[in-house]
Length: 534
Image 1 (tube, rainbow, N blue to C red):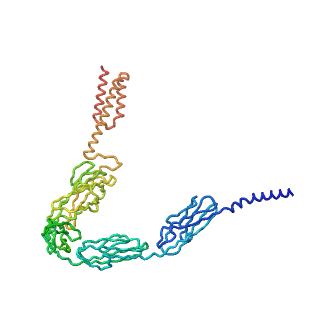
Image 2 (cartoon, rainbow, N blue to C red):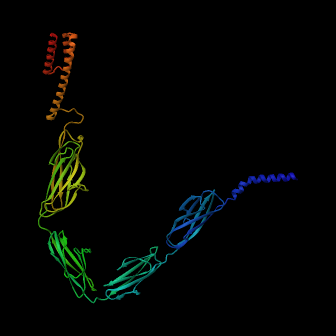
Protein backbone atom coordinates (compact mmCIF):
# COMPACT_ATOMS: atom_id res chain seq x y z
CA UNK A 1 0.00 0.00 0.00
CA UNK A 2 2.86 2.29 0.80
CA UNK A 3 4.39 1.57 -2.58
CA UNK A 4 1.11 2.42 -4.34
CA UNK A 5 0.96 5.72 -2.46
CA UNK A 6 4.48 6.55 -3.47
CA UNK A 7 3.69 5.81 -7.11
CA UNK A 8 0.66 8.12 -6.98
CA UNK A 9 2.72 10.93 -5.48
CA UNK A 10 5.40 10.55 -8.13
CA UNK A 11 2.76 10.53 -10.86
CA UNK A 12 1.20 13.71 -9.52
CA UNK A 13 4.58 15.41 -9.39
CA UNK A 14 5.29 14.47 -13.00
CA UNK A 15 1.89 15.72 -14.13
CA UNK A 16 2.48 18.95 -12.18
CA UNK A 17 5.81 19.49 -13.88
CA UNK A 18 4.23 18.93 -17.29
CA UNK A 19 1.26 21.23 -16.67
CA UNK A 20 3.06 23.96 -14.74
CA UNK A 21 4.05 26.01 -17.88
CA UNK A 22 0.52 25.76 -19.21
CA UNK A 23 -0.92 26.84 -15.90
CA UNK A 24 1.58 29.64 -15.64
CA UNK A 25 0.69 30.90 -19.18
CA UNK A 26 -3.01 30.70 -18.46
CA UNK A 27 -2.50 32.92 -15.44
CA UNK A 28 -1.00 35.90 -17.47
CA UNK A 29 -3.46 38.83 -17.56
CA UNK A 30 -3.72 42.22 -19.36
CA UNK A 31 -6.23 45.01 -18.72
CA UNK A 32 -6.51 48.68 -19.69
CA UNK A 33 -8.56 51.63 -18.53
CA UNK A 34 -9.27 54.61 -20.87
CA UNK A 35 -10.22 58.14 -19.85
CA UNK A 36 -10.75 61.41 -21.78
CA UNK A 37 -9.91 64.98 -20.73
CA UNK A 38 -12.16 66.82 -21.11
CA UNK A 39 -14.83 64.16 -21.42
CA UNK A 40 -17.61 66.66 -22.14
CA UNK A 41 -18.17 70.20 -23.33
CA UNK A 42 -19.86 72.44 -25.87
CA UNK A 43 -19.20 72.08 -29.59
CA UNK A 44 -16.67 72.43 -30.99
CA UNK A 45 -14.83 70.33 -28.37
CA UNK A 46 -11.21 70.28 -29.51
CA UNK A 47 -7.86 69.04 -28.21
CA UNK A 48 -9.28 66.18 -26.15
CA UNK A 49 -6.53 64.03 -24.59
CA UNK A 50 -6.91 60.24 -24.15
CA UNK A 51 -5.11 58.48 -21.26
CA UNK A 52 -4.69 54.67 -21.07
CA UNK A 53 -3.68 52.89 -17.83
CA UNK A 54 -2.51 49.28 -18.21
CA UNK A 55 -2.84 46.64 -15.45
CA UNK A 56 -2.44 42.87 -15.15
CA UNK A 57 0.65 40.70 -14.71
CA UNK A 58 1.75 40.64 -18.35
CA UNK A 59 5.20 42.11 -18.85
CA UNK A 60 7.28 43.59 -21.64
CA UNK A 61 6.76 46.27 -24.28
CA UNK A 62 3.26 47.79 -24.48
CA UNK A 63 1.72 48.93 -27.77
CA UNK A 64 -0.98 51.59 -27.40
CA UNK A 65 -3.49 52.29 -30.21
CA UNK A 66 -6.05 55.13 -29.95
CA UNK A 67 -9.25 55.62 -31.99
CA UNK A 68 -11.08 58.91 -31.30
CA UNK A 69 -14.48 57.82 -32.67
CA UNK A 70 -14.27 53.97 -32.65
CA UNK A 71 -14.50 53.94 -36.44
CA UNK A 72 -11.70 51.40 -36.86
CA UNK A 73 -9.05 53.99 -37.71
CA UNK A 74 -6.27 54.31 -35.16
CA UNK A 75 -5.41 58.01 -34.93
CA UNK A 76 -2.31 57.33 -32.83
CA UNK A 77 -0.02 54.36 -32.10
CA UNK A 78 2.78 54.35 -29.54
CA UNK A 79 4.98 51.60 -28.06
CA UNK A 80 6.82 51.91 -24.72
CA UNK A 81 7.23 50.22 -21.34
CA UNK A 82 5.18 52.71 -19.29
CA UNK A 83 1.93 51.40 -17.83
CA UNK A 84 0.29 54.79 -18.34
CA UNK A 85 0.34 56.76 -21.58
CA UNK A 86 -1.48 59.97 -22.63
CA UNK A 87 -2.12 60.95 -26.25
CA UNK A 88 -2.30 64.71 -25.70
CA UNK A 89 -4.71 66.94 -27.70
CA UNK A 90 -5.48 64.00 -29.98
CA UNK A 91 -9.20 64.28 -30.68
CA UNK A 92 -11.43 67.04 -32.06
CA UNK A 93 -15.23 66.89 -32.04
CA UNK A 94 -16.63 69.74 -34.18
CA UNK A 95 -20.33 69.14 -33.64
CA UNK A 96 -22.63 68.12 -30.81
CA UNK A 97 -23.16 64.39 -30.14
CA UNK A 98 -22.17 61.38 -28.05
CA UNK A 99 -18.81 59.92 -29.10
CA UNK A 100 -16.96 56.74 -28.07
CA UNK A 101 -13.18 56.55 -28.04
CA UNK A 102 -11.36 53.19 -28.09
CA UNK A 103 -8.00 52.05 -26.70
CA UNK A 104 -6.26 48.81 -27.68
CA UNK A 105 -3.20 47.65 -25.74
CA UNK A 106 -0.95 44.75 -26.73
CA UNK A 107 1.61 43.12 -24.41
CA UNK A 108 3.25 39.68 -24.24
CA UNK A 109 1.04 38.28 -27.04
CA UNK A 110 -2.06 39.52 -25.23
CA UNK A 111 -4.43 42.28 -26.36
CA UNK A 112 -7.12 44.27 -24.59
CA UNK A 113 -9.59 46.90 -25.82
CA UNK A 114 -11.44 49.45 -23.74
CA UNK A 115 -13.65 52.46 -24.44
CA UNK A 116 -14.72 55.74 -22.92
CA UNK A 117 -17.52 58.18 -23.75
CA UNK A 118 -17.17 61.84 -24.80
CA UNK A 119 -20.31 63.97 -24.68
CA UNK A 120 -20.38 67.12 -26.85
CA UNK A 121 -23.27 69.48 -26.22
CA UNK A 122 -24.72 72.20 -28.44
CA UNK A 123 -22.96 75.58 -28.16
CA UNK A 124 -25.15 78.16 -26.47
CA UNK A 125 -26.08 81.24 -28.51
CA UNK A 126 -24.21 84.41 -27.47
CA UNK A 127 -26.04 87.39 -26.04
CA UNK A 128 -24.90 91.01 -25.62
CA UNK A 129 -26.43 94.15 -24.11
CA UNK A 130 -24.91 97.61 -24.81
CA UNK A 131 -26.12 100.77 -23.06
CA UNK A 132 -25.25 104.51 -22.98
CA UNK A 133 -25.63 106.08 -19.53
CA UNK A 134 -27.69 102.99 -18.62
CA UNK A 135 -30.08 103.49 -21.55
CA UNK A 136 -30.67 101.28 -24.58
CA UNK A 137 -31.04 104.54 -26.56
CA UNK A 138 -31.43 106.53 -28.56
CA UNK A 139 -30.08 108.98 -26.00
CA UNK A 140 -29.80 112.76 -26.37
CA UNK A 141 -27.03 114.63 -24.54
CA UNK A 142 -25.76 118.19 -24.48
CA UNK A 143 -23.10 119.43 -26.87
CA UNK A 144 -19.54 118.41 -25.85
CA UNK A 145 -20.89 116.14 -23.08
CA UNK A 146 -19.38 112.83 -21.89
CA UNK A 147 -21.29 109.52 -22.15
CA UNK A 148 -20.58 106.24 -20.33
CA UNK A 149 -20.93 103.10 -22.47
CA UNK A 150 -21.46 99.83 -20.53
CA UNK A 151 -22.10 96.27 -21.72
CA UNK A 152 -22.53 92.65 -20.67
CA UNK A 153 -22.34 89.43 -22.68
CA UNK A 154 -22.89 85.70 -22.18
CA UNK A 155 -21.92 82.49 -24.02
CA UNK A 156 -19.24 84.44 -25.90
CA UNK A 157 -15.47 84.16 -26.18
CA UNK A 158 -14.66 87.64 -27.50
CA UNK A 159 -16.30 90.99 -28.41
CA UNK A 160 -15.48 93.56 -31.12
CA UNK A 161 -16.52 97.23 -31.38
CA UNK A 162 -17.72 98.89 -34.60
CA UNK A 163 -19.42 102.08 -35.76
CA UNK A 164 -18.11 105.18 -33.95
CA UNK A 165 -15.70 103.12 -31.85
CA UNK A 166 -13.39 100.23 -32.67
CA UNK A 167 -11.16 97.46 -31.39
CA UNK A 168 -11.53 94.40 -29.21
CA UNK A 169 -13.52 94.71 -26.01
CA UNK A 170 -13.74 92.64 -22.82
CA UNK A 171 -16.79 90.41 -22.34
CA UNK A 172 -18.16 92.67 -19.61
CA UNK A 173 -17.03 96.28 -19.22
CA UNK A 174 -17.55 100.02 -19.57
CA UNK A 175 -15.92 102.96 -21.38
CA UNK A 176 -16.32 106.76 -21.25
CA UNK A 177 -16.72 108.74 -24.49
CA UNK A 178 -16.16 112.49 -24.16
CA UNK A 179 -16.43 115.69 -26.21
CA UNK A 180 -19.44 114.57 -28.22
CA UNK A 181 -20.27 117.20 -30.85
CA UNK A 182 -22.47 115.20 -33.24
CA UNK A 183 -24.63 112.08 -33.33
CA UNK A 184 -22.74 108.84 -32.70
CA UNK A 185 -23.76 105.18 -33.02
CA UNK A 186 -21.85 102.48 -31.14
CA UNK A 187 -22.08 98.76 -32.00
CA UNK A 188 -20.72 95.75 -30.08
CA UNK A 189 -20.58 92.21 -31.55
CA UNK A 190 -19.79 89.19 -29.34
CA UNK A 191 -18.89 85.77 -30.79
CA UNK A 192 -18.62 82.23 -29.35
CA UNK A 193 -16.16 79.46 -30.21
CA UNK A 194 -18.37 77.98 -32.91
CA UNK A 195 -18.56 81.30 -34.75
CA UNK A 196 -22.10 82.24 -33.71
CA UNK A 197 -22.44 85.91 -32.76
CA UNK A 198 -24.82 88.51 -31.41
CA UNK A 199 -24.71 92.31 -31.74
CA UNK A 200 -26.23 95.31 -30.00
CA UNK A 201 -26.11 99.04 -30.82
CA UNK A 202 -26.86 102.28 -29.05
CA UNK A 203 -27.23 105.75 -30.60
CA UNK A 204 -26.27 108.98 -28.84
CA UNK A 205 -27.63 112.24 -30.28
CA UNK A 206 -26.03 115.61 -29.47
CA UNK A 207 -27.97 118.84 -28.93
CA UNK A 208 -27.15 121.96 -30.96
CA UNK A 209 -24.15 124.09 -30.06
CA UNK A 210 -24.68 127.48 -28.56
CA UNK A 211 -22.03 128.88 -30.92
CA UNK A 212 -21.25 128.49 -34.61
CA UNK A 213 -18.07 128.29 -36.67
CA UNK A 214 -17.35 128.87 -40.37
CA UNK A 215 -14.22 128.72 -42.52
CA UNK A 216 -13.10 129.81 -45.98
CA UNK A 217 -9.95 128.87 -47.92
CA UNK A 218 -7.95 130.62 -50.64
CA UNK A 219 -5.16 129.23 -52.81
CA UNK A 220 -2.62 131.83 -53.99
CA UNK A 221 -2.17 131.46 -56.91
CA UNK A 222 -5.11 129.24 -57.79
CA UNK A 223 -4.00 128.55 -61.38
CA UNK A 224 -0.88 128.34 -63.54
CA UNK A 225 1.14 126.10 -65.81
CA UNK A 226 2.84 122.88 -64.72
CA UNK A 227 4.82 122.60 -62.61
CA UNK A 228 2.96 125.00 -60.29
CA UNK A 229 5.03 125.24 -57.11
CA UNK A 230 4.93 127.37 -53.97
CA UNK A 231 1.14 127.78 -53.70
CA UNK A 232 0.06 129.53 -50.46
CA UNK A 233 -3.03 128.40 -48.53
CA UNK A 234 -4.91 131.04 -46.49
CA UNK A 235 -7.79 130.13 -44.14
CA UNK A 236 -10.21 132.64 -42.63
CA UNK A 237 -12.44 131.79 -39.61
CA UNK A 238 -15.81 133.43 -38.85
CA UNK A 239 -18.79 132.72 -36.54
CA UNK A 240 -19.72 133.22 -32.90
CA UNK A 241 -17.30 130.62 -31.51
CA UNK A 242 -14.45 132.00 -29.46
CA UNK A 243 -11.07 130.90 -28.19
CA UNK A 244 -7.92 129.65 -29.88
CA UNK A 245 -8.14 127.92 -33.25
CA UNK A 246 -6.80 124.60 -34.51
CA UNK A 247 -5.98 124.58 -38.24
CA UNK A 248 -5.39 121.54 -40.46
CA UNK A 249 -4.42 121.92 -44.16
CA UNK A 250 -4.51 119.29 -46.92
CA UNK A 251 -3.04 120.23 -50.35
CA UNK A 252 -4.96 117.57 -52.32
CA UNK A 253 -7.94 116.74 -50.06
CA UNK A 254 -6.77 113.13 -49.90
CA UNK A 255 -7.49 112.73 -46.18
CA UNK A 256 -3.91 113.32 -45.07
CA UNK A 257 -3.31 116.62 -43.27
CA UNK A 258 -0.10 118.15 -44.62
CA UNK A 259 0.07 120.92 -42.00
CA UNK A 260 -1.38 121.12 -38.46
CA UNK A 261 -1.36 124.17 -36.17
CA UNK A 262 -2.96 124.03 -32.72
CA UNK A 263 -4.08 126.71 -30.26
CA UNK A 264 -3.42 129.69 -32.53
CA UNK A 265 -4.91 133.16 -32.34
CA UNK A 266 -3.98 133.87 -35.99
CA UNK A 267 -7.00 134.69 -38.16
CA UNK A 268 -6.58 134.47 -41.06
CA UNK A 269 -3.83 131.83 -41.10
CA UNK A 270 -1.54 131.62 -44.15
CA UNK A 271 0.78 128.71 -44.93
CA UNK A 272 3.43 130.09 -47.28
CA UNK A 273 4.66 127.87 -50.16
CA UNK A 274 2.44 125.11 -48.85
CA UNK A 275 1.71 123.09 -51.99
CA UNK A 276 3.44 121.96 -55.18
CA UNK A 277 1.60 120.59 -58.22
CA UNK A 278 3.92 118.97 -60.76
CA UNK A 279 1.45 117.76 -63.38
CA UNK A 280 -1.47 119.38 -65.22
CA UNK A 281 -4.91 118.87 -63.66
CA UNK A 282 -7.54 120.27 -61.31
CA UNK A 283 -6.70 119.97 -57.60
CA UNK A 284 -8.72 120.59 -54.43
CA UNK A 285 -7.10 121.90 -51.24
CA UNK A 286 -8.88 121.60 -47.90
CA UNK A 287 -8.83 123.20 -44.43
CA UNK A 288 -10.47 122.08 -41.17
CA UNK A 289 -10.81 124.48 -38.22
CA UNK A 290 -11.82 123.81 -34.60
CA UNK A 291 -12.71 126.49 -32.05
CA UNK A 292 -14.35 126.40 -28.66
CA UNK A 293 -17.46 124.22 -28.34
CA UNK A 294 -18.65 124.82 -31.90
CA UNK A 295 -18.83 122.06 -34.46
CA UNK A 296 -15.64 121.91 -36.58
CA UNK A 297 -15.84 123.70 -39.93
CA UNK A 298 -14.25 122.76 -43.26
CA UNK A 299 -13.65 124.58 -46.55
CA UNK A 300 -12.00 123.86 -49.89
CA UNK A 301 -10.24 125.77 -52.68
CA UNK A 302 -9.69 124.72 -56.30
CA UNK A 303 -6.32 124.92 -58.08
CA UNK A 304 -6.16 124.53 -61.88
CA UNK A 305 -2.79 123.52 -63.36
CA UNK A 306 -2.49 123.85 -67.15
CA UNK A 307 -0.02 122.05 -69.43
CA UNK A 308 3.16 124.05 -69.81
CA UNK A 309 4.07 125.59 -73.14
CA UNK A 310 7.36 124.62 -74.75
CA UNK A 311 8.74 121.22 -75.62
CA UNK A 312 10.76 118.28 -74.40
CA UNK A 313 13.93 117.45 -76.31
CA UNK A 314 17.11 115.43 -75.83
CA UNK A 315 20.66 115.14 -77.03
CA UNK A 316 22.29 111.72 -76.90
CA UNK A 317 25.89 110.67 -77.51
CA UNK A 318 27.78 107.44 -77.04
CA UNK A 319 31.48 106.57 -76.69
CA UNK A 320 33.47 103.42 -76.00
CA UNK A 321 36.88 102.50 -74.66
CA UNK A 322 38.92 99.29 -74.53
CA UNK A 323 39.38 98.45 -70.84
CA UNK A 324 41.70 95.55 -71.66
CA UNK A 325 44.08 97.83 -73.60
CA UNK A 326 43.51 100.93 -71.43
CA UNK A 327 42.38 103.25 -74.24
CA UNK A 328 40.39 106.46 -73.84
CA UNK A 329 36.75 106.99 -74.80
CA UNK A 330 36.13 107.45 -78.53
CA UNK A 331 33.41 106.83 -81.10
CA UNK A 332 35.35 104.00 -82.76
CA UNK A 333 37.53 101.72 -80.63
CA UNK A 334 39.81 98.87 -81.76
CA UNK A 335 39.66 95.50 -80.02
CA UNK A 336 40.94 91.96 -80.20
CA UNK A 337 38.61 89.01 -79.57
CA UNK A 338 37.84 88.39 -75.89
CA UNK A 339 38.59 91.94 -74.67
CA UNK A 340 36.36 94.06 -72.36
CA UNK A 341 34.75 97.26 -73.70
CA UNK A 342 33.18 100.02 -71.57
CA UNK A 343 30.40 102.10 -73.14
CA UNK A 344 29.46 105.60 -71.93
CA UNK A 345 26.14 107.27 -72.78
CA UNK A 346 25.47 111.01 -72.28
CA UNK A 347 21.83 112.17 -72.30
CA UNK A 348 20.91 115.85 -71.86
CA UNK A 349 17.50 117.53 -71.67
CA UNK A 350 17.79 120.26 -74.31
CA UNK A 351 14.15 121.36 -74.47
CA UNK A 352 12.47 124.13 -72.54
CA UNK A 353 10.53 121.60 -70.45
CA UNK A 354 11.80 118.76 -68.24
CA UNK A 355 12.19 115.39 -69.95
CA UNK A 356 9.95 113.28 -67.71
CA UNK A 357 9.97 109.54 -67.10
CA UNK A 358 13.03 109.04 -69.30
CA UNK A 359 14.19 105.53 -70.26
CA UNK A 360 17.58 104.53 -71.71
CA UNK A 361 17.88 101.28 -73.62
CA UNK A 362 20.97 99.77 -75.27
CA UNK A 363 21.02 97.17 -78.04
CA UNK A 364 24.18 95.06 -78.24
CA UNK A 365 25.11 93.54 -81.62
CA UNK A 366 25.94 89.90 -82.11
CA UNK A 367 29.40 88.98 -80.74
CA UNK A 368 29.12 91.55 -77.91
CA UNK A 369 27.82 90.25 -74.55
CA UNK A 370 26.61 92.32 -71.58
CA UNK A 371 29.08 92.09 -68.65
CA UNK A 372 27.45 94.40 -66.09
CA UNK A 373 28.89 97.15 -63.85
CA UNK A 374 25.93 99.39 -64.74
CA UNK A 375 26.28 102.92 -63.31
CA UNK A 376 24.31 106.17 -63.48
CA UNK A 377 26.41 109.25 -62.74
CA UNK A 378 29.13 106.88 -61.48
CA UNK A 379 26.79 105.24 -58.94
CA UNK A 380 26.24 101.50 -59.27
CA UNK A 381 22.56 100.72 -59.94
CA UNK A 382 20.38 97.69 -60.45
CA UNK A 383 18.25 97.26 -63.52
CA UNK A 384 18.70 96.07 -67.08
CA UNK A 385 19.80 98.54 -69.72
CA UNK A 386 19.18 95.92 -72.42
CA UNK A 387 15.42 96.02 -71.71
CA UNK A 388 15.26 99.66 -70.57
CA UNK A 389 16.61 101.62 -67.57
CA UNK A 390 14.38 104.40 -66.18
CA UNK A 391 16.50 107.39 -65.12
CA UNK A 392 13.57 109.57 -64.01
CA UNK A 393 13.15 113.23 -64.98
CA UNK A 394 15.83 115.52 -66.42
CA UNK A 395 15.34 119.23 -65.97
CA UNK A 396 16.35 121.51 -68.85
CA UNK A 397 20.13 121.31 -69.50
CA UNK A 398 20.55 118.51 -66.96
CA UNK A 399 22.77 115.61 -68.07
CA UNK A 400 22.97 112.03 -66.89
CA UNK A 401 25.85 109.68 -67.67
CA UNK A 402 25.27 105.94 -67.97
CA UNK A 403 28.16 103.46 -68.23
CA UNK A 404 28.30 99.68 -68.51
CA UNK A 405 30.67 96.97 -69.71
CA UNK A 406 30.49 94.36 -72.47
CA UNK A 407 32.86 91.62 -73.61
CA UNK A 408 33.88 90.80 -77.18
CA UNK A 409 33.35 87.22 -78.33
CA UNK A 410 36.32 84.85 -78.62
CA UNK A 411 38.40 84.50 -81.80
CA UNK A 412 36.48 81.45 -83.02
CA UNK A 413 33.42 83.69 -83.57
CA UNK A 414 35.22 85.96 -86.07
CA UNK A 415 36.54 85.56 -89.59
CA UNK A 416 40.03 86.64 -90.64
CA UNK A 417 40.42 90.40 -90.90
CA UNK A 418 38.37 93.24 -89.32
CA UNK A 419 34.75 93.05 -88.11
CA UNK A 420 32.70 96.16 -87.17
CA UNK A 421 30.35 95.79 -84.18
CA UNK A 422 27.94 98.74 -83.99
CA UNK A 423 26.27 99.34 -80.61
CA UNK A 424 23.09 101.50 -80.50
CA UNK A 425 21.68 103.44 -77.52
CA UNK A 426 18.10 104.77 -77.35
CA UNK A 427 16.76 107.44 -74.96
CA UNK A 428 13.00 108.00 -75.00
CA UNK A 429 9.77 108.93 -73.24
CA UNK A 430 6.27 109.57 -74.52
CA UNK A 431 7.30 112.88 -76.11
CA UNK A 432 10.75 112.36 -77.65
CA UNK A 433 13.23 109.65 -78.68
CA UNK A 434 16.93 109.86 -79.65
CA UNK A 435 19.56 107.30 -80.72
CA UNK A 436 23.36 107.24 -80.77
CA UNK A 437 25.96 104.64 -81.77
CA UNK A 438 29.52 103.60 -81.00
CA UNK A 439 31.63 101.18 -83.05
CA UNK A 440 33.98 98.40 -81.95
CA UNK A 441 36.43 97.24 -84.67
CA UNK A 442 37.57 93.69 -83.95
CA UNK A 443 40.70 92.48 -85.80
CA UNK A 444 41.65 88.84 -86.19
CA UNK A 445 45.22 88.65 -87.60
CA UNK A 446 45.60 84.89 -88.18
CA UNK A 447 43.61 81.70 -88.35
CA UNK A 448 43.97 79.57 -85.23
CA UNK A 449 46.37 76.64 -85.83
CA UNK A 450 47.82 77.94 -89.14
CA UNK A 451 51.40 79.17 -89.83
CA UNK A 452 51.75 82.94 -89.59
CA UNK A 453 52.38 84.52 -92.99
CA UNK A 454 54.35 87.81 -92.91
CA UNK A 455 52.15 90.67 -94.06
CA UNK A 456 52.63 94.40 -93.55
CA UNK A 457 55.11 96.23 -91.31
CA UNK A 458 54.70 93.96 -88.25
CA UNK A 459 55.40 90.75 -90.20
CA UNK A 460 58.43 92.31 -92.02
CA UNK A 461 59.92 93.24 -88.66
CA UNK A 462 59.54 89.72 -87.38
CA UNK A 463 61.16 88.33 -90.55
CA UNK A 464 64.12 90.73 -90.26
CA UNK A 465 64.66 89.70 -86.64
CA UNK A 466 64.62 86.03 -87.60
CA UNK A 467 67.10 86.63 -90.47
CA UNK A 468 69.44 88.54 -88.13
CA UNK A 469 69.32 85.69 -85.64
CA UNK A 470 70.26 83.14 -88.32
CA UNK A 471 73.16 85.32 -89.56
CA UNK A 472 74.52 85.68 -86.02
CA UNK A 473 74.40 81.93 -85.55
CA UNK A 474 76.29 81.32 -88.85
CA UNK A 475 78.94 83.93 -88.04
CA UNK A 476 79.57 82.39 -84.63
CA UNK A 477 79.87 78.99 -86.21
CA UNK A 478 82.37 80.22 -88.83
CA UNK A 479 84.55 81.87 -86.16
CA UNK A 480 84.65 78.69 -84.13
CA UNK A 481 85.47 76.72 -87.29
CA UNK A 482 88.31 79.12 -88.13
CA UNK A 483 89.82 78.65 -84.69
CA UNK A 484 89.54 74.91 -85.03
CA UNK A 485 91.17 74.84 -88.47
CA UNK A 486 93.97 77.17 -87.39
CA UNK A 487 95.04 74.74 -84.68
CA UNK A 488 94.65 71.63 -86.77
CA UNK A 489 96.15 72.79 -90.09
CA UNK A 490 99.70 71.81 -89.24
CA UNK A 491 98.74 68.32 -88.12
CA UNK A 492 96.69 67.53 -91.21
CA UNK A 493 98.55 69.48 -93.81
CA UNK A 494 97.22 72.56 -95.46
CA UNK A 495 95.55 70.83 -98.35
CA UNK A 496 93.84 68.27 -96.14
CA UNK A 497 92.57 70.94 -93.77
CA UNK A 498 91.34 73.14 -96.57
CA UNK A 499 89.59 70.27 -98.25
CA UNK A 500 87.93 69.16 -95.06
CA UNK A 501 86.83 72.70 -94.23
CA UNK A 502 85.47 73.26 -97.69
CA UNK A 503 83.49 70.02 -97.60
CA UNK A 504 81.99 70.81 -94.17
CA UNK A 505 81.04 74.34 -95.08
CA UNK A 506 79.51 73.30 -98.39
CA UNK A 507 77.35 70.80 -96.52
CA UNK A 508 76.18 73.48 -94.07
CA UNK A 509 75.43 76.20 -96.57
CA UNK A 510 72.39 75.90 -98.78
CA UNK A 511 72.99 75.93 -102.53
CA UNK A 512 71.71 79.46 -102.72
CA UNK A 513 73.82 80.76 -99.78
CA UNK A 514 74.47 84.45 -100.03
CA UNK A 515 77.58 86.14 -101.28
CA UNK A 516 78.61 87.35 -97.84
CA UNK A 517 79.06 83.77 -96.62
CA UNK A 518 81.20 82.91 -99.67
CA UNK A 519 83.43 85.95 -99.12
CA UNK A 520 83.94 85.02 -95.48
CA UNK A 521 84.93 81.48 -96.51
CA UNK A 522 87.45 82.72 -99.10
CA UNK A 523 88.98 85.06 -96.55
CA UNK A 524 89.37 82.23 -94.06
CA UNK A 525 91.18 80.08 -96.69
CA UNK A 526 93.61 82.90 -97.49
CA UNK A 527 94.39 83.35 -93.79
CA UNK A 528 95.18 79.65 -93.41
CA UNK A 529 97.48 79.69 -96.45
CA UNK A 530 99.28 82.74 -95.12
CA UNK A 531 99.83 81.07 -91.77
CA UNK A 532 101.30 77.97 -93.51
CA UNK A 533 103.65 80.15 -95.58
CA UNK A 534 105.01 81.68 -92.43
